[in-house]
Length: 216
Image 1 (cartoon, helix red, strand yellow):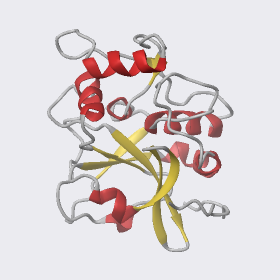
Image 2: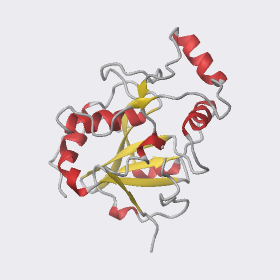
Image 3: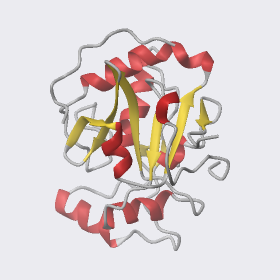
Image 4: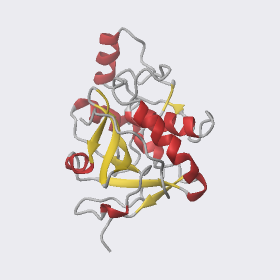
């Protein structure tokens, strides 16, 4: 599977989950291909805790996703995190978490990968979408970048459709983090608005297949 050459920008800078191969040690990353998705469970304080509370369905949970991009024999990830969309080295990405899993588009969708990557790279530098509300591609959160990139590649039709967002914890309450965030933003809490999350991506087995990165 080949992806057309794309100019590298200078700005280098989640419920079928029990069947996913969870990686918590040395990885066989040589088999990763451009367009693969790497999901991880970050420890980023109250934000990650709130995301996990709302989206985790099993003990294994993922709150971040990046897109593999191989360029001149170096493996990067395109990710929306921190302040913006940017490139990050594979090593740096893996250093952020010791719980990782990988997903790959099924062969019938391989033709989407060049445009998927083209779209994702073209978003580099755009700000992180802290509101988690769709905003005509002015900013992105991690799984939003994946969903919208695949839509662009699929003739502007969603391959993986957004779902109604749930921001409630296991007790049905809106955590304090979300309440304070949207109060600061002066926006209503987007409970029930369309969106996505990394754990939701692990359910899309009609489009994505797990990759075992364990050494055999």
